[in-house]
Image (cartoon, rainbow, N blue to C red; front, side, top):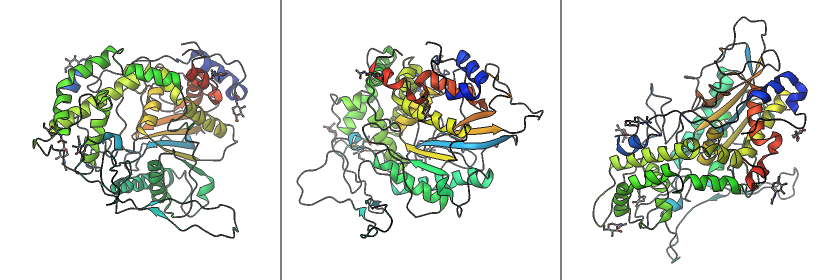
Amino acid sequence: MLPFSPSTPSFLTLLFPAAAKAAADVVDLGWHAPAQTDINNLTTALSSEGIYGFIFNSSETPEGQYGTYNWCNMPHVRTREYVKPSDEFELRYVEVIQRHHKRTPYASNAFPVEPYHWDCDDQGLFFFGQRLLPGSAWGASARTFWDGYTSDINPFVQSGWIGSCQFPQITSTGLDDSWTHGADLYGVYHDLLKFLPGKDSDWQSKVRYRVTTNQITSQVAGMLIAGTWGTSSSIPLLVQASAVDSLEPAYACTVGSTLFSDIKSSANAAWAEHLTAAAGLYAALDAISGVPASDSGFHASFDHYYDNLSARQCHAKALPCNVTSGSCVTQEQAHEVYRLGQWEYSQIYRDAPASLAASVSSYGVWIAELAAHMRSVISGTNDILYFHNVAHDGSISRLLSVLQIEEMVWPGMGSEIIFELYKRTDRSSDSRVPPTSRQLRWAEGQGGFYVRVLFGGKTLKSSNPSLGLISMLPVETLLAYFDGLVGENASLVRGKCNGSISL
Ligand SMILES: *[C@@H]1O[C@H](CO)[C@@H](O)[C@H](O)[C@H]1NC(C)=O
Ligand SMILES: *[C@@H]1O[C@H](CO)[C@@H](O)[C@H](O)[C@H]1NC(C)=O
Ligand SMILES: *[C@@H]1O[C@H](CO)[C@@H](O)[C@H](O)[C@H]1NC(C)=O
Ligand SMILES: *[C@@H]1O[C@H](CO)[C@@H](O)[C@H](O)[C@H]1NC(C)=O
Ligand SMILES: *[C@@H]1O[C@H](CO)[C@@H](O)[C@H](O)[C@H]1NC(C)=O
Ligand SMILES: CC(=O)N[C@H]1CO[C@H](CO)[C@@H](O)[C@@H]1O
C-alpha cells in the first residue's frame, strides 16, 4: 500500500498540524492476518464437535455468560458489564452501528418444499406516508399497517416459505430484543454516564437514527427507539436512496464485488478446499431438504443452510425433517453448518488478503461518513451527541474487516459496534493512557481527542499494529487510517470501485 500523502490540507492538518502529519506519515494501511483460532481453522470447522460454546437456540444468554457469542441476540453494552473510562476522559460523541435483530429467514433460503409455517399475525408492520407540513388541510394519516395473508384463490404460490410473514420480517421476539437493546443503551449512556439527555428533555435535537431501505431495519429502529426513550411519537429515520445507500451498502462497486467473488471462488484454494471437504455434509443435507445438487445458491457457501437452520433454532422450532424418508437434520449437522459458516465469514472478511481492499471499496463511503461525523464534533460544528445506524451482517462484517478485527465471527442478530469519542480534560493528571507498545502516542497534548471501539460490549482488538486494542487511541491515528484508505469525504472510493485508482 502506498503511504498516505495528503495533497490538500485536511481538517486535521489545519487544526492540529503536527499530530495530523505524524499520523499520516506513520499509520500502517496494510492488511494484517487475523489470529489463528478454532474459527478460522478448517480442520476444527470440519471435525470438532459443538459450536465453540456459542449460543444458537435462544435470545437469552445465561447470567454470568453475558458477552458470549449468541447468534440469536448478540451481546451489546449494558450497565452491568460496561467498563467506564477514567474521569479524565469526557465523552463527546457516540456512533452505534448494529445488525437488525432476529427475523424469519429470507425467501431465498427456503427448501424446495417447505411444509412449515412462519406466521406473523401477532404484529403489524405500520407503513404510511404523512405530510410533515404543519397545518395541512388533510390532517394526519391513519396508522395503517400491513396484515400479511395468503389467498385461497390465488393459484400462484410464492416459492419458499409459507405463512403470513414477509420473508424477511423481524419476528415478535426479535422486536422484544430490539426494545431491550434500546433500553440497555439508555442505561449505559444516560443512567451510567449521564451523557445522553433524559427522556423528558429535548433529546430529539441531539440524536439521529439511520436505516437502510430494507424494511427490517425500520422494524428494529421503531422498537429500539421506544426502548431507549419510552416514546411512541413520530421520529425521523435517515435513509439514503436504495441504489446508492452507503449503510447497507448498496452503491455500485464493481471492483469490490469482483474481489469478494474471487475470494468465494475456486481461484481461492482455501475456499475450494472447504467446499470439497464439506461434500459429505452437503449430500446429507440435500437428501433431507430436497435441494438439488445443481442449486448454486445453496452450494456456493453454507449461507443458505445456515440461515434456514439458525432462524428455526433461534425461534425454538425443531430442526427440519424429510416427510418422505422421515430423516431429520441432526443437531450435530447443524453445528457443523454453523462452524463452516463462521469459517467462511473469517475467510471472506479477514483471512483472504484481498478482504481489506474489498471492504474498503465497498464500505468506504460509510467509513468516510463516520470520519466526517467525528471531525465535525471535534471542530465544534456538530452538536449531535449520538448517531445510531441499523444495518445488516454485510455492513458489520465489512466494518470489522476494515478495522481488521483480530478474531472474525459471523455477526449475529443485533451485533453492535460502538465508536466512542472522548476529550481528555485533565492534562495535568499523572495518570497516563496505558501505552500499547506499537500504538502511536504522538498526539498527546495535541488535539486531545481519543477513540474507543466496542464490539459486543468489549474493546475491539485489531491485527493492524497502528490500531491495536482500540481503547483511547488518539483520534488522529484512526482518522489518518480511514483517510489513507478511503480519502477524506470518500474521495478515493469511486475511483477504487471503478478501478481507476489501484488498490
Ligand atoms: C488447526 O487445528 C488442528 C486440530 O486441532 C491443529 O492440529 C492445527 O495445528 C491447527 N492449525 C493451526 C494453523 O492452528
Ligand atoms: C441449546 O443448546 C445448548 C448447547 O447446544 C443445549 O445445552 C441447550 O439444552 C439448548 N437449549 C434448548 C432450549 O434447546
Ligand atoms: C425427501 O427425500 C426424498 C427421498 O430421499 C427426496 O426425493 C426428496 O427430494 C426429499 N425432500 C423432500 C422435501 O421431500
Ligand atoms: C469534506 O466535506 C466537508 C463538509 O461538506 C467540507 O467542509 C470539507 O472541506 C471537505 N473536505 C475536503 C478535504 O474536501
Ligand atoms: C471512475 O471514478 C473516477 C473517480 O471518481 C471518476 O473520475 C471517473 O469518471 C470514473 N470512471 C468511470 C468510467 O466511471
Ligand atoms: C434446513 C432447513 O431447515 N430446511 C428447512 C428450511 O426450513 C424449512 C421450513 O422450515 C424446512 O422445510 C426445511 O426443511
